[in-house]
Image (cartoon, rainbow, N blue to C red; front, side):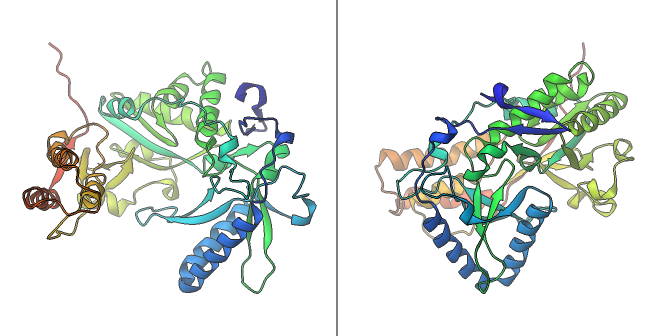
Length: 393
């Protein structure tokens, strides 16, 4: 389906959503009333948080100004006969982000009056990228690294205009205004197939231009996880070529790279300051030279990976649900802190053997063990060298 519908013209990809039925047969039912009610609830939240409203409005205005969406007359739709769907939307806030603190996410799983959603009619698509574990291993193999991120990857891929009628949102800048309809023209967050379509476009770009950009294509196929690219090499010259090929190759698909960082400043000399992940001031201080990549904290100055848990309040008593919630905050894709996590897993195992309900307090013995685990966890910060040194015999 992807190969039959994908187009690459004027350095822009255009794709179709992989639906389970022909587009003209799509009859989702009434989604407008539920999307409208959720928008009213969002406006109530705006009244309580004016700063959130300003950031949200800025996001929507930018979305339209960049050509990723457009205002349409809602009366141009035949809501009874046309394939039409209205997405509800809400904010996701990332306090640690330096570029996009607030992101608007669209809900393709909101059900209509027929108890179906847009995601229900959509195929998921397979995973077409290397596994996270493999990419992290590759990231640790060589002396020099270069980390970057594809800017607004989803929104740089256009949706076939014939399908845009099932990507609408409701918006107005003030409760005194009439509610307007915005049609989303690109791949959006919140749809089941979005991740597949975006990553499949990267692979398509790599395959089409692999002869001209072999190093860049290899990075897209093997060292890219969603929109994060982590290149490494023992040669600064080779890594420099990888950087140039990635920039030129991705530009052929309308993609831009930003959030650059490296453990060698020579590789970043021709990168504009605004596109760097760290400022010169941050690079001069070990304690602030951290970047997030592939879910891990990487210290550029010391070339180390850091694994720490979010500080947890030490409670007198824990329920089974609270214990599992704390355990799930430990993100360890490489299994580096397995000996620590296994202690909590054994405690959780005991709760299942004792058939404790989710909201019941742990027994005195298990509670003491878990309380000690949380105390030790708050004191723990694991730092390991990123580069794995191999000694040739």
